[in-house]
Length: 509
Image (cartoon, rainbow, N blue to C red; front, side, top):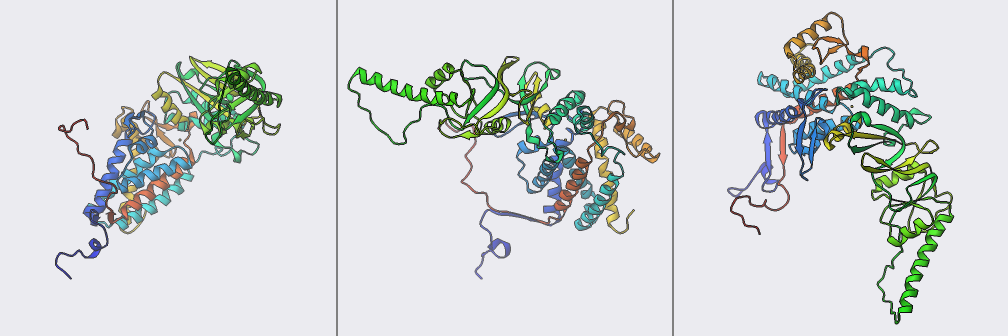
């Protein structure tokens, strides 16, 4: 072998790669990265959590305490910290709540693991201890379920609202009752005969700046934050024709030239175009349609004839909103400008233009609507407040592993400790009182963030969702043990050319 020739791992990878291995380089660095992430999100845990100002790569401003949004917009690149973020995203996909708990608890587990590693325990022994403690915690969690809480009348908005107080108060403390009533009314309004078929996408949220949160309301049907295109602003017992593209005269797919020799020929050509378009609009009106929804622009001449035949024109440029209009009305999106058949027409009890504050909004709905869609219209003073409210609406062993199990129990204290700190309460005194209450047999005692005293929060309806805590514990433990079992990090050379120079001496070019 020639002198200087790479060998081993170096001979297999391209120049520019990085390899980190061993306890100091891989395990402890991974733990440090995960702790750095969770220290960012931990202070946002709970009803009194602090907001973060996040500016993403598109210069969009976020003011939020939602951990899922914070971690997602930060674009975490470290592979170990990314594992924790993926666990939080899995929690959001499974339950929709508890992302901050996953991040905070996983980071706390890794923080306690660091102390055990420095005491001489092997990472595998710590991971095994955490896995055993996680199974015991999940089993103990089932014993804390409030009797009778499994039974719920899903057709009662008041009963559903009481169950929503817990997860909503953790995001928007103080207004949870208002939000719970809104969400409950919307969910009950679209509840199918078989509750197992409930689709979350049938509950929409529209944010309209102005007013206060108490001005928010639920509308049965689909609300779009935009105006109408023509002069017709409402249609009762509406028949809806939906077109996937713009509503205007169609142009040929090949280029052509029209030779016009006189003013009469020019006038005749223009009248021919008008007559053709009028025939199209008249055919749509004769089909029984009273509302025309277009995924593109309406031509000026098309709007003239739509107004002439009394048809309401609504432009919906978003393909996702266009699909929701079809689902809300039962219409079929058409290509071209052909007249719809009776089976392709949708129906709505009413389609009307409203002004909410100073913002125009179009409602597809009404009591006679066949739509299984409800819209929560949120009002608030700022866009950041509305975004945050929308996110609230969108909640004794043996062996060496005994040390890890004991640390697991200590890590669980991070939740009440953080809640006490963010509420301005003495953390140590609050934890001591909570320990005393549990020792006295009050297994369901939690921390009252207003007084700092332990009490059964379920008495006033602030119940935690079992699925959120079950999945949160499981995913946090799995993420932490996965990080602990990583002993090497191998990173290939970053793709792309060199980064541009940055300095004060660069010119405008």
